[in-house]
Every structure is written in C-alpha cells, then in structure tokens.
Amino acid sequence: MATDKLPTREANFSEWYIELVRRAKLADYSDVKGCMVIRPNGYAIWENIQKVLDAKFKDTGHKNAYFPLLIPESFLRKEAEHVEGFSPQLAVVTHAGGGKLEEPYVIRPTSETIINSTFAKWIQSYRDLPLLINQWANVMRWEMRTRLFLRTTEFLWQEGHTCHETEEEAEKETLQMLEVYRDFAENTMAMPVMVGQKTDSERFAGAVRTYSIEAMMQDKKALQAGTSHNLGQNFAKAFNTEFQGRDGKQHHVWQTSWGVSTRLIGALIMTHSDDAGLIVPPKLAATHAVIVIIGKGEERAQVKEKAVAMASDLKKAGLQVIVDDDESKGPGFKFYEYELQGVCLRIELGPKDLQKSQCVMVRRDNRQKEFVNLADTVSKATSLLDAMQKDLFEKAKAFRDAHTFEVNSYEEMKAKADAGFLLAHWNGDAKVEKRIKDELGLTTRNRAVTVKQAPGKCVMTGEPSVGRIVFAKAY
RNA sequence: CGGGGCGUAGCGCAGCCUGGUAGCGCGCCUGCCUUGGGCGCAGGAGGUCGGAGGUUCGAAUCCUCUCGCCCCGACCA
Image 1 (cartoon, rainbow, N blue to C red):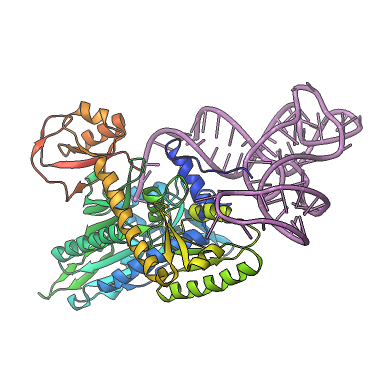
Image 2 (tube, helix red, strand yellow):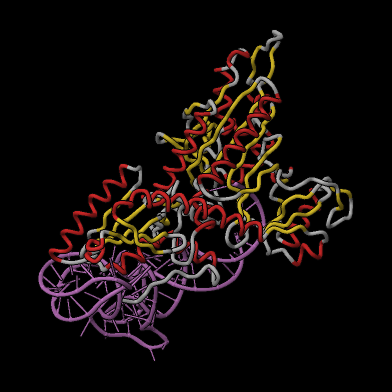
C-alpha cells in the first residue's frame, strides 16, 4: 500500500492544516457553503472544552440560560456601532409560515441585543445585580472566505453576558473572565497566550473596551483565541436596562460580554500538531490511550485478555481508553492511524511482552518508546500524560518566545514582518495602524500585560508612544 | 464581488482535443493468508459522467445556458 502522508507544515502550512482536519476525522465540509460538519473526533474535543470551561464559569458564579436564535432586525439597530459592525455579516429571515414576515429576523451573530431586551425585564433593583449569565449556542456570521474551525459561517461558542451596579464591577468582571480564558488556554490547552487590551479599531462593535488572548500558531501567525468586553452602558441605554440604585434613583446597568468558540479547536491543532497528524493535550483528548493487540491465534487470545484487564484498570484511573482487536489491519497501519488521530498514548501488547510481563508505551508528542512493567501501567500512563501536558506547553511557549521580537524602526518591522510577534511602539493613531496593516500586513493584536510598558517613539512617525504593543500577521 | 481552477464509483483521478461497450488507484464486501511501523492472493459490489437544453444515427466527449464547490485577493471570532 502506498504510504499516504500529510503535506508537511514546512511545505504548505494551510494544506497541512486542512488535510489534517479531514484525515483525523475532526470535521468535513458540508453541503451548505461555508458550514462544516463537526465529526465525533472533533466534537469530543469541543465537549471537553465545554466541560472544563463550564465548570469555571459556574465556579465564578455564572448560570447558564438560553436565548432565541432569531433576533428582530430592529433590535440590532438600537445600538448604532453594533449594527454597523455586524450588518455585512447577517443572515436574515424574511419569510416564515408560508408568508412574508412583517419584520425580518436576523439569525444571531451574537446575542447582546436579544439578551438585553430580556435583562431589562428581569432587573428592577440593585438587589437583582450582579446578573451573571452564560449561554452555549451556535451563531452565524456570513463570511466571504471560510476555513474549517477557524472561520465558518455557523459556529459554536459560549457567550457570557453580565450586568453590574458599577463601572468598576463591570471592569473587574471583564478582567476576571479574561483571566479564566488565559488560565484555560495555558493550563488546559497548553497554549501560551498574550493577554491584553485591543486597540479601538479592533474593538468589538458596541463595546467600550475589548480584551483578548492571542496565541501564536506554528506558522508564526497570531490567532485571537478569546475575547472579553467591557460594554459600559451602551446596550443598557439602547434597551433601557435600568435598576433602582441604593440612592433611590434609576441607573443604567454596567455590562460585560465574553466568548470563545470552536475556533479554539483550530488553535489547538495549529499549536501542537506535527507532520504525522493531530496532537492533543491530555486534558482535552478524546482518547488518552489505545491498546494495540499484537499476535495471532491462541497467543492473541491471551494477549487480548490481558489488554482488556489493562484497559479496565486505566479507565478506573479516569482515562479514556480503547482496545484495538481488529485483525484485518496490521499493527503498523494502526500506529500511523492513531498518530494521525491524536491518541495521546499508544500501548503495544504482544506475546513477547506477556512473556516478560511488560508492555510498550509510546507518547504521541515525542514518540519516545519505553518498556513498562505490567504492574506499573496505570502509574506510568498517568505520569506520561502529565509530562506530555506539561511538555506541550513548554514547547509551545519556547516557540512563541523564540519568535517574539522588539522592533525599534519601521525598517526593522518590515524586515521581520513574517517573523512572529513584533513588540513595537505606536503613537495610538488609527491611521498609522491602518497604514502598517496595508503596507506590511501586520495588525495590532493587543497591548499585552506581560510586555513592560515604557515610553518610546512610534516606529512610523517618531511621535511619543506610551508603550509597546503586539503586532503580527493574524488569522 | 474580482481573478484562477474543478465537477466522471465513498475518496483521488484518467478518458474529452480527434463522438462509437465508462476506466484506473485507494477504500468497501467475501474467503484464505498475515500481524512488533502503512502485508499478500483470489473473487465481488458500486456510476442518471453536477443539471437543463441543443447538434448528431449515436454525446462523459462538440455547442449554449445553468448550478455548485475549492483556491487566491478586499471583510472577520
């Protein structure tokens, strides 16, 4: 059989990505333009993302709810900047029930408006605050160019929406959820991120301030992995979301919203995977270990018995395990297949192993092979997975740091345009920002809190700058 | 919306120029064989050739129209 290898990252990163997504059975194109089918392998990762994040949301006092998919078109118009930002991306329902609707509905691109129309009814007094709501939902944004997981017309996400009594509380909430995302990205996804505030031109339509976490993919491009917005009173004013305050007077609530999407799966892939296929950090993996049975006839039956017992032990330790007893495929084929699909740990078990009371364990990320005494399988498996989780983060962080540079002139910036994250001084002028984008393809990512802020001179104009901001080519 | 490409078996493609029984590889099914890095042998199933018109004795092939998708650019999580 022909060895059917993936394109390499080096040769063609985007081909590599698309092929990997399809061959690892994460997602498929659908019959609907721009929309994808998330397959069980991909959806399992999303379910794990949901599980971890949902627990964090609950821990921080949020409750889940669900709002309608359809939003009256007039709602969008109530917040001027919001409608302007989203109108090119809206899908609109004009007919239903066999006739034309009096007022069209838009399919939600996000839910600030429909949620505010409800919040306005729920909130009367400061005693109703804070109101901390999250929803897991699908949204639709019409896109001109789509890419599996990274940008599709319909996607899955969570959107948090909160209301507060004071501006300070809203800001605190915005930053708290940003920190939840940072922690999740780094400790669960093993993906280091730059955390900071977006510039005005990159701000969410309708927000006062937008913060993001930005990750570096293996092609050195930036990917916005999560956003948290301080909405101020913009939507509250548009929808009269008011409460009677401690002073007895009516006030508009102070709001936030924050979200991450199935895009995170794309981020995960482009952060960790290699030319052999998918690599998933153990904390999010659908399958932690596969036990591949080797041997034939009588010997095989004995091996299988042992493999089933081993799987049972591993499952008791909380691992997702599959036992592969398919005799129609050779072991070699299976090794390639499970590497492609991102199973964290391969355990080979054959007659020779049984004689020596051992098995072979191979970590997916570094493909190191070791012989493990059968008595130690559970402890060894868990320690290898722990090490893998940690190593993936360290490796990604080392890569990111090795491709992050301070640049001090426009020439230098131009020379390093494809080199990764560029930390540069900028005078804060949107026109300069746009010029850099047009000329070099570099956009501001955020003003990262980990980048020491000291005054300097704008790389383009030489004018004063309050501190360096992250520039990069971005997805 | 501009530029390019492609629609033929589940997937990848050839056949089209020069009209005449619809093919190849992979996958799939059955049986045998094999099993420590993509095994082998034999047999088998599977296609309104994207769609609609037209030319012709005859169209996957020529002509007209149409639909869809992918890639590259302008917008975006």
